[in-house]
Amino acid sequence: MLMNNPTIRRIAATGLAASFFVAAPAIAQSTADRDRCFNPDGASTADAVIAACTALADAYGRGEISLPDAAATFIGRGNVYAALGQRNLAMADWDRAIAVYDRAVGAASSDPNLYLGRGNVGFLKRDYDSAIADYDRTIALDPKSVDAHLGHGRSYYQKKDYGRAVASYDRVIALAPDHLEALAERGDVHEQNGQYARAIEDYSRLIALQPANSKAWNNRCWDRALTGQLEPALADCNEALRLTPDDTDAIDSRGFTYLKLGQFEKAIQDYNTVLAQIPGQAGSLYGRGIARLRGGDAAGGRADIAAAKAIEPGIAEVYAHYGVRE
Image (cartoon, rainbow, N blue to C red; front, side, top):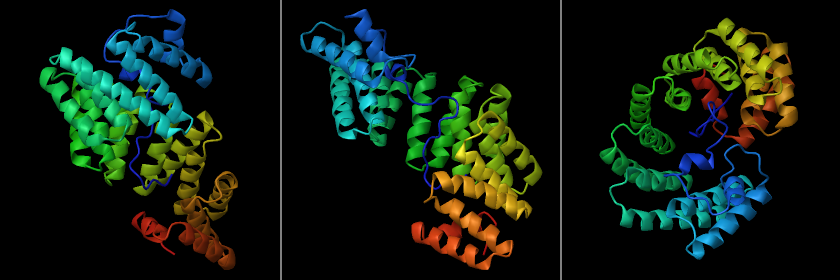
């Protein structure tokens, strides 16, 4: 599984639920609207969430709901817009949530949850410096805030400040040793930073806690393949695919493992499967090209490599770093 950008891969959770960003218990305006808007179990449709959140936003405009409810309302609707690809609408709602938190901070500046909530919205907006500043304020008031240290880690990760990200995740895990997201994300940071042995340790801990976590199995497969632990890597990829048979990331990782094992036909088969679904994935094209070259198909191999380089000019250097050269 080729990764070039430091994005937080959700292993322990599938996304940032609106409930993560609620800074304090809310007062219900309408139980049905509140349940649909905050959608903690993911059961509501996007249209239902938007309609319910809009009703609550109107109630806030009339002064009928609390500030924490109002913040959660705008965050909930913003999250849905973001999931629908309507980022401009999402940003507008997250800005409204920030304005609500600003009001709340003015009324209760010693409440760490308000800074935490505002920091989380800053993170959603990708305003990582502002998010970090609010997490700092949260930690100053509540040094054992797991969520604030987690937010620190995520923000530093996105800024590619891997040392500070790891230090923040370390604090989370010191406070909550079995914190699934912190283990997963710290493993990702180690991987991005080339600390593959440490990444493997974190994914192994995660697998022990969540044996059915296919992403953790896949990530450990990838890092084991990178470090030459090829048979254990293959076993990990096979387990990931047993759990999630159509996972193209795991199929790509197994193709890479087969490539390093010298099993070129099996590598080509896996890369074919990935490219049938994601034709422009440069890493899979390049891997298939190398497998074809080494398997005796010079023309096919060179065509794949050329196509991969056209999509991602630096792909050969990436694979050279992984120990695979033309």
